Figure 1: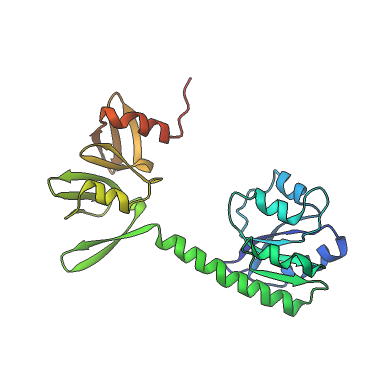
Figure 2: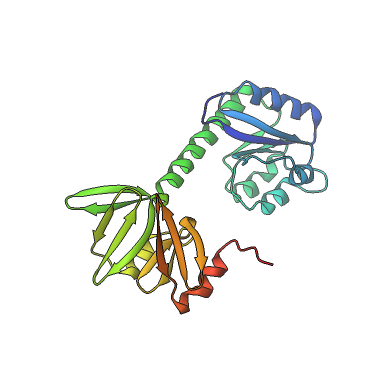
Length: 240
């Protein structure tokens, strides 16, 4: 199995069709089967399903919950290939941004073509996600790439800001407001008029200070009164 195989599940109520698709998946190196179900309800309620689903091979006419109803329950957006004996659902299916719609009976050549298309789309989405987890910072005449996890905190310096990273400190001509707009809110939060922090790097919050530890030393950063409530509400907080 290649490292970049898609984790896929099959939802198909007709056993003969489901077994055939399982055989097709088994012989396709782009795919890693992590679940095969006879109903959408069974797929949703499978508590053992821990891995992220990248591809759903989905029938539409299912007991208890249709394929379309199942798609509406999804919080994430896996790639979807519809497997159906009915052509009449095709237009509605594409409204859910499905990658392909295979009419039964399914042949392996048709299945492989659909999976190849799905794989190309998935890899493209993976690359976009990777790009969105990085930022380029100008350093003289060069552009230096930093992953979000490398940026520890950002400190205001008049009309500049200093990026404190795991590799180096960089001073760039930016305002705090402008740089905050460039960075994702699920990583970075302003905690003081002079500080933005990577919330994933906070090790301790005590009184009106937070501490970021990188290496042998801890950096103490003050928390502004007007920022504290927003900071605490964004944290996965457990208290007694």
